[in-house]
Image (cartoon, rainbow, N blue to C red; front, top):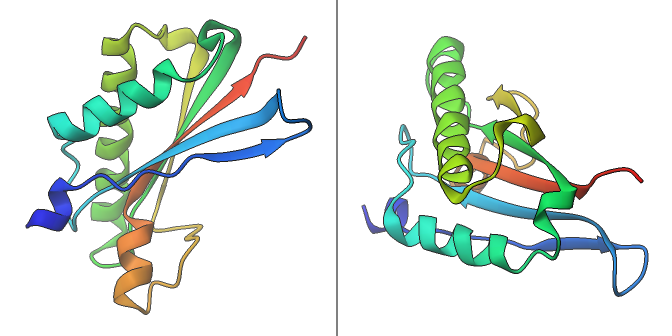
Length: 135
């Protein structure tokens, strides 16, 4: 499925000023039942990471999600696997595991409406959130 091979990425910046955003967010969207991050998605993630100034002065959170299709147990597993796939890519990029935290939400805390096809598609994702370390 071509859609599962595509990476839809978003960069959200909430800024106190034009120069110092509160956080950066990058979302990787998955096809139903999938957790593999293909090479195209990896390259887009790496390009996004290169754009963040002073990356070593940030903490990183991985939030993994699923839609509500399937059992709660399967969705918990799928969410975990998506989070681990994202973690592996960050580690391969050279980010130390000590600055990375993971929260696997599974089908809970959906941002979009799971009763629609579009909402389920948007809920199948991993959000990588990067915040500056407190000074």
